[in-house]
Image (cartoon, rainbow, N blue to C red; front, side, top):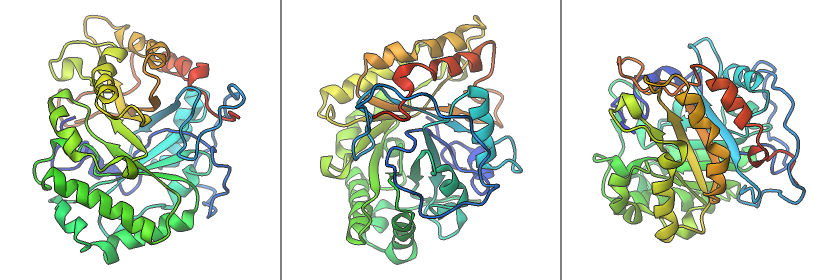
Amino acid sequence: MSRTPAGRHGTARARWTVTASLLMLLGASCSGTPPAAQPSQSAAAPSPPSPAATTPGCAPTDKLVPPCGAYWGMYIAPRDNRTTVGQAVGDMESRLGRKLDIVFSYHDMSTGRNGTFMREDEVALGRDRILLLSWEAKIWGTPERTLRWRDIASGAMDATVIDKQAARIKEYGRPVMIGFDGEMDRRTTSGTPAEYVAAYRHIHDRFRDLGVTNVIWVWAVTGFMEYKDTWKSLYPGDEYVDWISYDPYNFATCRGAAWKSFEQTLKPTYDWFQANGFAAKPIIIGEYGTEVDPRDAAAKATWFQGIPQALKRMPNVKALLQWNAVLNPESPDGCDFRLEGPGVLETFAEVGRDPYLNQRGAG
């Protein structure tokens, strides 16, 4: 996915970060561990009842991998700066008739609010959802500043940034997924692949040395096949990675691309991972979505219908998170992946009721 100087997803990111986290969904109360802190009453809107349990004996592993099916997730862009993350999630869950499994927040590596893990909104959402935190090697703002991976690896940011966030994660206590600098495969200003690996390993080892044992580590690339020759050189190693992740999109009209089904959108990269030494790792589809087809008003809804059967043919995909936003909202050709259009939300809600995508209460 194309990135702009304003952040991972363009100027919209900078507008949302202080009042809202970027959301994904991935597993709910899997650990059974009580939260470490009680959020305020207003931090999250009420959600509908959890869906029914699936097959007994399908409890997630210690790395939150569901052995039966996949987690159902979503990023929801808040309507405006007055809408909290909890409200945005609660509103969508009410429309879908089920609770999301995972929420996804983006953070920079600043010393301010944007760089603070486990804010009140995240603690509230984490009560019965898995949290996935993306930690970008940037300082957001105007202008945005890109951090060098070699500086992170050197330990220069330990005392001011890394150690403080490690302490917050440790205090939180529940399992948390963390991904460091996702989509680094298309980055040209942060350093070399070896420097990325060194920075990732340094953060992982620093957390370990500080006694943080509740992190599940996620390694995320774009998944765009033009970057596949870089992926192995960017991989930190099996002992450092619990899940791998990529971000497939049916860009269609907004990028002048050919229309692809859900399976056609995901499968080339999936097959590459299975054939190139990554088959033992569970996969999170960290972001996904489809544009409209101006020739067929029903095509967007139909695109989602194929998800359950396609996932059964890609069994290592254990979680997927729909990206419900406009990629470049200030552009007339901005790539609109919101669940809007004839029958789209209704179809998405129906797919989310499929037994393969209902992990709550399993086991």
